[in-house]
Amino acid sequence: MSASPSTVQPSLQKAHGQCLCGKVKIQAGAVVLQAGVCHCQYCQKWGGGPLFTLDAGTEVKLDGACFVSTFKSSDWAERGFCNNCGTHLFYRLKQNGQYFIPVGLLDQLTDLVLDHQIFIEQKPEWYCLANQTTELTGAEVFAAFSAI
Image (cartoon, rainbow, N blue to C red):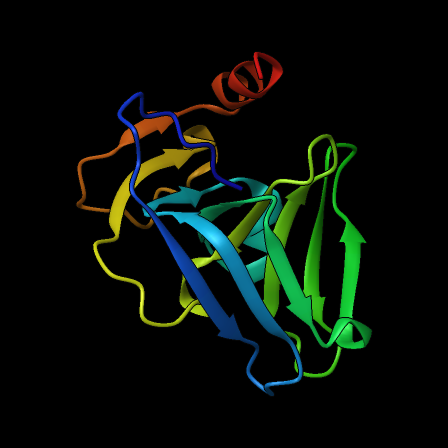
């Protein structure tokens, strides 16, 4: 999960992609080009490491819906994946239907910037990202979302 904490108006781009097997195709009307990294324990367990995502808002279309399974990973969100090949498709907030899509799932994006890292206090000591980013704790993320 990634919150876009920057106060500068972010660049947006339409985006599309597909899962590994091609049975699920995804289209997003306006992806924020500020990538975020989530270091929470849920993302680490889900993908074996941090989750790099883009905020795709609520205008997301999934073709191949019969191959999309969801998992309620918390009281506030669910995670979607292709039930044929296992590709991670999205993290979606239940409150407003906002999608966060793994960066690597989307094709031909330009002008991406790594902008922020969240749940920084849960990041393991064994790796470090060199990019200069905004870093938020889990408490700061929840405070930002409760203000929405």
